[in-house]
Image (cartoon, rainbow, N blue to C red; front, side, top):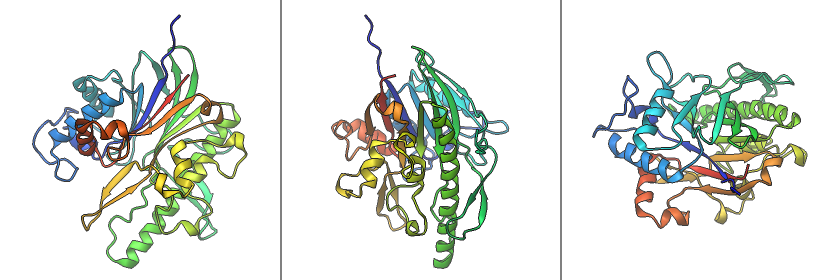
Length: 342
Protein backbone atom coordinates (compact mmCIF):
# COMPACT_ATOMS: atom_id res chain seq x y z
CA UNK A 1 0.00 0.00 0.00
CA UNK A 2 1.36 3.41 -1.02
CA UNK A 3 1.32 6.09 1.68
CA UNK A 4 0.52 9.57 0.33
CA UNK A 5 3.26 12.14 0.87
CA UNK A 6 2.12 15.34 2.60
CA UNK A 7 1.82 18.38 0.39
CA UNK A 8 4.27 21.21 0.98
CA UNK A 9 2.94 24.71 0.24
CA UNK A 10 5.24 27.74 0.43
CA UNK A 11 5.09 31.50 0.17
CA UNK A 12 8.19 33.51 -0.66
CA UNK A 13 8.53 37.24 -1.32
CA UNK A 14 11.54 37.52 -3.62
CA UNK A 15 12.85 41.08 -3.41
CA UNK A 16 13.44 42.69 -6.82
CA UNK A 17 12.98 39.40 -8.65
CA UNK A 18 12.16 41.26 -11.85
CA UNK A 19 15.63 42.84 -11.92
CA UNK A 20 17.13 39.38 -12.48
CA UNK A 21 15.55 38.99 -15.95
CA UNK A 22 16.19 40.73 -19.26
CA UNK A 23 13.54 42.00 -21.69
CA UNK A 24 13.36 38.54 -23.28
CA UNK A 25 12.60 36.96 -19.88
CA UNK A 26 16.06 35.41 -19.73
CA UNK A 27 18.19 35.21 -16.59
CA UNK A 28 20.75 37.97 -16.07
CA UNK A 29 23.56 35.88 -14.60
CA UNK A 30 26.24 38.55 -14.25
CA UNK A 31 28.07 40.76 -11.79
CA UNK A 32 25.67 43.68 -12.18
CA UNK A 33 23.98 45.10 -9.11
CA UNK A 34 20.75 43.40 -8.06
CA UNK A 35 18.08 45.15 -6.04
CA UNK A 36 19.67 43.65 -2.92
CA UNK A 37 22.25 45.76 -1.08
CA UNK A 38 25.79 44.64 -1.93
CA UNK A 39 24.64 41.52 -3.83
CA UNK A 40 25.15 40.90 -7.54
CA UNK A 41 22.50 39.44 -9.81
CA UNK A 42 24.47 36.20 -10.11
CA UNK A 43 24.78 35.93 -6.33
CA UNK A 44 21.07 36.50 -5.80
CA UNK A 45 20.15 33.97 -8.49
CA UNK A 46 22.50 31.40 -6.99
CA UNK A 47 20.96 32.03 -3.57
CA UNK A 48 17.42 31.78 -4.91
CA UNK A 49 18.14 28.52 -6.74
CA UNK A 50 19.59 26.99 -3.57
CA UNK A 51 16.65 28.16 -1.45
CA UNK A 52 13.98 26.94 -3.88
CA UNK A 53 15.70 23.55 -4.12
CA UNK A 54 15.92 23.31 -0.33
CA UNK A 55 12.21 24.12 0.02
CA UNK A 56 11.35 21.30 -2.38
CA UNK A 57 7.75 22.52 -2.28
CA UNK A 58 4.84 21.28 -4.35
CA UNK A 59 3.57 24.86 -4.76
CA UNK A 60 5.38 28.14 -4.08
CA UNK A 61 3.38 31.37 -4.05
CA UNK A 62 5.94 33.82 -5.44
CA UNK A 63 5.36 37.37 -4.23
CA UNK A 64 7.04 40.14 -6.25
CA UNK A 65 7.32 37.73 -9.17
CA UNK A 66 8.77 39.01 -12.50
CA UNK A 67 6.89 41.54 -14.59
CA UNK A 68 3.88 40.70 -16.77
CA UNK A 69 3.26 43.25 -19.51
CA UNK A 70 3.91 44.20 -23.11
CA UNK A 71 6.83 42.10 -24.25
CA UNK A 72 7.30 40.53 -20.81
CA UNK A 73 6.00 37.19 -19.54
CA UNK A 74 6.03 36.34 -15.84
CA UNK A 75 5.28 32.70 -16.66
CA UNK A 76 8.15 32.41 -19.14
CA UNK A 77 10.57 34.05 -16.70
CA UNK A 78 9.60 31.81 -13.77
CA UNK A 79 9.58 28.62 -15.82
CA UNK A 80 13.02 29.51 -17.21
CA UNK A 81 14.29 30.07 -13.67
CA UNK A 82 12.77 26.76 -12.53
CA UNK A 83 14.36 24.85 -15.39
CA UNK A 84 17.77 26.44 -14.81
CA UNK A 85 17.52 25.71 -11.07
CA UNK A 86 16.41 22.10 -11.46
CA UNK A 87 13.08 22.52 -9.65
CA UNK A 88 10.32 19.92 -9.79
CA UNK A 89 7.88 22.82 -9.24
CA UNK A 90 8.53 23.97 -12.80
CA UNK A 91 5.10 25.05 -14.03
CA UNK A 92 4.05 28.68 -13.48
CA UNK A 93 0.67 30.40 -13.36
CA UNK A 94 -0.36 34.04 -12.99
CA UNK A 95 -3.73 35.69 -12.53
CA UNK A 96 -4.51 39.39 -13.02
CA UNK A 97 -1.40 41.38 -13.87
CA UNK A 98 -0.31 44.15 -11.49
CA UNK A 99 0.17 47.86 -12.06
CA UNK A 100 3.83 47.49 -11.15
CA UNK A 101 6.72 45.17 -11.94
CA UNK A 102 5.75 42.99 -8.98
CA UNK A 103 3.37 40.15 -9.77
CA UNK A 104 1.78 37.38 -7.73
CA UNK A 105 2.41 34.01 -9.35
CA UNK A 106 2.70 30.37 -8.38
CA UNK A 107 5.29 27.75 -9.27
CA UNK A 108 4.00 24.19 -8.88
CA UNK A 109 4.73 20.56 -9.59
CA UNK A 110 2.22 19.42 -12.25
CA UNK A 111 2.71 15.81 -11.20
CA UNK A 112 1.33 16.66 -7.76
CA UNK A 113 -1.12 19.49 -8.41
CA UNK A 114 -3.49 20.87 -11.01
CA UNK A 115 -4.10 24.61 -10.62
CA UNK A 116 -6.32 27.04 -12.50
CA UNK A 117 -6.92 30.77 -12.01
CA UNK A 118 -10.54 30.89 -10.88
CA UNK A 119 -11.62 34.44 -9.95
CA UNK A 120 -15.30 33.72 -9.52
CA UNK A 121 -17.38 36.74 -8.46
CA UNK A 122 -18.35 36.86 -4.79
CA UNK A 123 -21.74 35.69 -3.62
CA UNK A 124 -22.38 38.54 -1.18
CA UNK A 125 -21.13 41.63 -2.95
CA UNK A 126 -17.38 41.00 -2.76
CA UNK A 127 -16.14 41.71 -6.31
CA UNK A 128 -13.32 40.03 -8.16
CA UNK A 129 -9.89 41.27 -7.21
CA UNK A 130 -9.43 43.19 -10.47
CA UNK A 131 -12.23 45.61 -9.51
CA UNK A 132 -12.71 47.90 -6.54
CA UNK A 133 -14.28 47.49 -3.13
CA UNK A 134 -16.26 49.84 -0.91
CA UNK A 135 -15.69 49.95 2.84
CA UNK A 136 -16.21 52.31 5.77
CA UNK A 137 -13.00 54.07 6.77
CA UNK A 138 -12.60 53.67 10.55
CA UNK A 139 -10.57 56.89 10.83
CA UNK A 140 -12.88 59.28 8.97
CA UNK A 141 -16.14 57.31 9.21
CA UNK A 142 -16.71 57.96 5.51
CA UNK A 143 -17.32 55.36 2.81
CA UNK A 144 -14.19 54.74 0.74
CA UNK A 145 -13.17 52.59 -2.20
CA UNK A 146 -9.99 50.61 -2.53
CA UNK A 147 -8.32 48.57 -5.26
CA UNK A 148 -5.36 46.23 -5.41
CA UNK A 149 -2.24 47.36 -7.27
CA UNK A 150 -1.28 43.67 -7.08
CA UNK A 151 -4.58 41.73 -7.34
CA UNK A 152 -4.62 38.53 -5.24
CA UNK A 153 -4.24 35.27 -7.16
CA UNK A 154 -7.32 33.10 -6.58
CA UNK A 155 -6.77 29.46 -7.49
CA UNK A 156 -8.81 26.28 -7.72
CA UNK A 157 -6.49 23.39 -6.81
CA UNK A 158 -6.68 19.63 -7.16
CA UNK A 159 -4.11 17.16 -5.86
CA UNK A 160 -3.04 14.05 -7.76
CA UNK A 161 -5.18 12.02 -5.33
CA UNK A 162 -8.28 14.11 -6.14
CA UNK A 163 -8.49 16.41 -3.10
CA UNK A 164 -9.88 19.83 -4.07
CA UNK A 165 -9.19 23.09 -2.25
CA UNK A 166 -8.84 26.80 -2.94
CA UNK A 167 -5.80 28.98 -2.52
CA UNK A 168 -5.48 32.78 -2.53
CA UNK A 169 -2.05 34.41 -2.94
CA UNK A 170 -1.83 37.87 -1.36
CA UNK A 171 0.42 40.95 -1.36
CA UNK A 172 -1.39 43.75 0.45
CA UNK A 173 -0.43 47.40 0.41
CA UNK A 174 2.89 48.30 2.01
CA UNK A 175 2.49 50.72 4.90
CA UNK A 176 6.00 52.14 4.50
CA UNK A 177 5.79 55.92 3.79
CA UNK A 178 7.95 55.77 0.68
CA UNK A 179 8.76 59.18 -0.79
CA UNK A 180 8.09 61.16 2.40
CA UNK A 181 9.83 64.56 2.36
CA UNK A 182 9.55 65.49 6.02
CA UNK A 183 8.00 64.40 9.31
CA UNK A 184 4.50 65.61 8.46
CA UNK A 185 4.63 63.91 5.07
CA UNK A 186 5.84 60.72 6.72
CA UNK A 187 2.81 60.73 9.05
CA UNK A 188 0.37 61.50 6.23
CA UNK A 189 1.67 58.80 3.89
CA UNK A 190 1.96 56.24 6.67
CA UNK A 191 -1.67 56.72 7.70
CA UNK A 192 -2.90 56.79 4.10
CA UNK A 193 -1.13 53.52 3.33
CA UNK A 194 -2.45 51.98 6.54
CA UNK A 195 -6.01 52.87 5.52
CA UNK A 196 -5.53 51.29 2.09
CA UNK A 197 -4.09 48.15 3.64
CA UNK A 198 -7.06 48.00 6.02
CA UNK A 199 -9.53 48.28 3.12
CA UNK A 200 -7.74 45.59 1.13
CA UNK A 201 -7.87 43.23 4.11
CA UNK A 202 -11.60 43.89 4.54
CA UNK A 203 -12.09 43.02 0.85
CA UNK A 204 -10.01 39.88 1.20
CA UNK A 205 -12.00 38.88 4.28
CA UNK A 206 -15.27 39.30 2.37
CA UNK A 207 -14.03 36.86 -0.27
CA UNK A 208 -12.88 34.47 2.47
CA UNK A 209 -16.37 34.63 4.01
CA UNK A 210 -17.82 33.63 0.64
CA UNK A 211 -15.55 30.58 0.40
CA UNK A 212 -16.08 29.46 3.99
CA UNK A 213 -19.86 29.77 3.75
CA UNK A 214 -19.67 27.62 0.62
CA UNK A 215 -17.67 25.00 2.52
CA UNK A 216 -14.51 25.44 0.44
CA UNK A 217 -11.27 24.17 2.03
CA UNK A 218 -9.10 27.29 1.83
CA UNK A 219 -5.46 28.37 2.08
CA UNK A 220 -4.65 32.11 2.15
CA UNK A 221 -0.96 32.93 1.95
CA UNK A 222 1.52 35.66 1.08
CA UNK A 223 2.94 38.96 2.30
CA UNK A 224 0.40 40.97 4.29
CA UNK A 225 2.76 43.84 5.13
CA UNK A 226 1.22 43.64 8.57
CA UNK A 227 1.72 41.98 11.90
CA UNK A 228 1.66 42.62 15.63
CA UNK A 229 2.71 46.18 16.49
CA UNK A 230 4.20 46.79 13.04
CA UNK A 231 3.14 50.45 12.84
CA UNK A 232 2.16 53.34 15.11
CA UNK A 233 -1.39 53.70 13.77
CA UNK A 234 -2.84 50.46 15.12
CA UNK A 235 -4.73 52.27 17.86
CA UNK A 236 -6.84 54.06 15.22
CA UNK A 237 -8.16 50.81 13.77
CA UNK A 238 -10.40 48.18 15.39
CA UNK A 239 -8.17 45.34 14.20
CA UNK A 240 -4.90 44.85 12.37
CA UNK A 241 -5.15 43.68 8.78
CA UNK A 242 -3.93 40.22 9.75
CA UNK A 243 -6.60 39.91 12.46
CA UNK A 244 -9.29 40.95 9.97
CA UNK A 245 -8.20 38.32 7.46
CA UNK A 246 -7.97 35.66 10.18
CA UNK A 247 -11.52 36.57 11.28
CA UNK A 248 -10.73 36.94 14.97
CA UNK A 249 -14.09 38.62 15.64
CA UNK A 250 -16.02 35.80 13.98
CA UNK A 251 -17.30 32.40 15.16
CA UNK A 252 -14.75 29.60 15.27
CA UNK A 253 -16.06 27.98 12.09
CA UNK A 254 -15.36 31.22 10.17
CA UNK A 255 -11.83 31.78 11.45
CA UNK A 256 -8.61 31.02 9.61
CA UNK A 257 -5.61 29.70 11.50
CA UNK A 258 -1.89 30.33 11.17
CA UNK A 259 0.41 29.02 13.88
CA UNK A 260 2.90 31.88 13.51
CA UNK A 261 0.15 34.50 13.57
CA UNK A 262 -1.22 32.97 16.75
CA UNK A 263 2.24 33.14 18.34
CA UNK A 264 2.92 36.69 17.18
CA UNK A 265 -0.45 38.12 18.15
CA UNK A 266 -0.24 36.54 21.60
CA UNK A 267 2.17 39.43 22.42
CA UNK A 268 4.73 37.02 23.91
CA UNK A 269 7.50 38.65 21.89
CA UNK A 270 10.26 36.31 23.06
CA UNK A 271 8.63 33.45 21.14
CA UNK A 272 7.37 35.37 18.11
CA UNK A 273 8.75 34.21 14.74
CA UNK A 274 9.89 36.71 12.10
CA UNK A 275 9.79 36.32 8.33
CA UNK A 276 11.41 39.53 7.06
CA UNK A 277 14.56 41.53 7.82
CA UNK A 278 14.96 45.04 6.41
CA UNK A 279 17.90 47.42 6.43
CA UNK A 280 16.94 50.80 7.88
CA UNK A 281 18.38 54.11 6.60
CA UNK A 282 20.76 54.26 9.57
CA UNK A 283 22.19 50.84 8.70
CA UNK A 284 20.44 48.87 11.44
CA UNK A 285 17.98 46.07 10.69
CA UNK A 286 14.29 45.69 11.50
CA UNK A 287 12.78 42.21 11.76
CA UNK A 288 9.05 41.50 11.53
CA UNK A 289 6.48 38.78 10.91
CA UNK A 290 4.83 39.74 7.62
CA UNK A 291 4.38 36.46 5.72
CA UNK A 292 1.69 33.94 6.57
CA UNK A 293 -0.01 30.71 5.48
CA UNK A 294 -3.57 30.65 6.86
CA UNK A 295 -5.93 27.69 6.61
CA UNK A 296 -9.65 27.13 7.05
CA UNK A 297 -10.90 25.09 10.05
CA UNK A 298 -11.33 21.89 8.00
CA UNK A 299 -7.69 22.07 6.88
CA UNK A 300 -6.29 22.95 10.28
CA UNK A 301 -6.68 19.35 11.44
CA UNK A 302 -4.73 18.21 8.37
CA UNK A 303 -1.90 20.73 8.82
CA UNK A 304 1.31 19.11 10.07
CA UNK A 305 3.97 21.81 10.34
CA UNK A 306 4.41 25.55 9.77
CA UNK A 307 7.99 26.69 9.27
CA UNK A 308 9.72 30.04 8.72
CA UNK A 309 13.03 29.40 6.97
CA UNK A 310 14.81 32.04 9.04
CA UNK A 311 18.61 31.53 9.03
CA UNK A 312 18.88 33.00 12.53
CA UNK A 313 16.03 31.15 14.25
CA UNK A 314 15.31 27.88 12.44
CA UNK A 315 17.62 25.03 13.59
CA UNK A 316 17.58 23.34 10.19
CA UNK A 317 18.71 26.54 8.50
CA UNK A 318 21.12 27.72 11.22
CA UNK A 319 22.95 24.39 11.11
CA UNK A 320 23.55 24.66 7.35
CA UNK A 321 25.98 27.54 6.59
CA UNK A 322 25.43 27.22 2.84
CA UNK A 323 21.67 27.50 3.18
CA UNK A 324 22.05 30.44 5.60
CA UNK A 325 24.17 32.30 3.05
CA UNK A 326 21.70 31.50 0.28
CA UNK A 327 18.75 32.79 2.32
CA UNK A 328 20.58 36.03 3.10
CA UNK A 329 21.42 36.60 -0.57
CA UNK A 330 18.03 35.61 -1.93
CA UNK A 331 15.68 38.19 -0.39
CA UNK A 332 14.84 40.43 2.54
CA UNK A 333 11.98 38.01 3.28
CA UNK A 334 12.38 34.38 4.32
CA UNK A 335 10.16 31.61 2.91
CA UNK A 336 7.31 30.18 4.95
CA UNK A 337 6.15 26.60 4.39
CA UNK A 338 3.22 24.47 5.48
CA UNK A 339 3.24 20.68 5.29
CA UNK A 340 -0.32 19.42 5.07
CA UNK A 341 -1.84 15.98 4.63
CA UNK A 342 -4.43 16.22 1.87
